[in-house]
Image: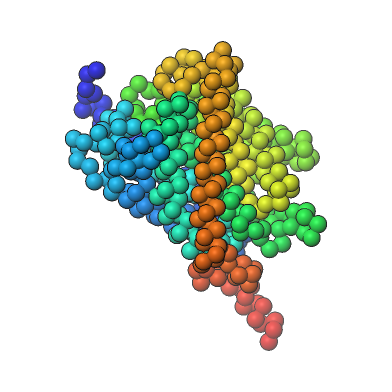
Length: 439
């Protein structure tokens, strides 16, 4: 096979770095989405933790995580390439799982890093409004160094699920199922926010303070997903990324429309949050299958995700009695499962041939083989993430503690954790008025 031209390598490198920056900008989307979906007394804290966690992920993934995920080793973990201490002529020998791409190591690291950071950002949705700041440091380090990279190695780094032919093009399992499961474990161990559930177990709606932020954050995430999925080609040459962009957009649109319609039919109101979750759930689901399904299949993937995201969030809250403030498990966990299974049903033979991973789906005459591989991957990755997250978070709970005090939670994490308000003109005026009334 002829070596790519310098011009082709340059074009591919520009594409990969550009899409990495788009995925990085998703952190801004998470900041707005989560801040708008929580109460104003926690606004600064919720927004700033995305900045903190991206910094932690960057350093830890550089030192350890990238090597465990993509470095050569065995079928369980990578054991080489730590601190990116690899000479140019040995990159493909150390990171053979990424040797299909000719872009420089720095571009590969940057692109894979922002995926790890997104998965970590998902976790914090389940912990919002009552977790100590120290939890972000400790769990963020362990998640970026070990938990996320191990699953990444299994599926993308030449591990045992890769050998089985598991299809997860851009991370419905690697990124979203992991983040959603870890968020669920954290929410369970933390317990619900004060006032979330009544004595009889019925939930109260602790409304977010700014739906405009929530919608704008969703649009930014949708925009960033054009880096997430199309960028996973790690190449501009061949232009397959354009097809992936198309299926991604179709699915997101279907999910948003179905999410609102389902809410309208079920609750009598075309709920805005349901539409938001429908878009996000569809984007999560199409992330695994964007390169494998036909456009009609993308509609199905997105529409089903819109349905799952609505009832999934309700299930976690009303049936399981778990307080997951951002719906991290319902949207990212459950829709990640559906998206990963979807290729087992809908993977098109021509697209499977193009990507070169796995087999066609059941509805295209491929039988149940690919579906069973997908299911095995979901169960293994879900179980590992749940167990590892529980061990780490439980250890934190028994040592430094997971949760702020009741007084700190009622005051708000902006002031109790950071000593300042996200909206100082609002809360300082309220405090002054309260003090005046007591004189």
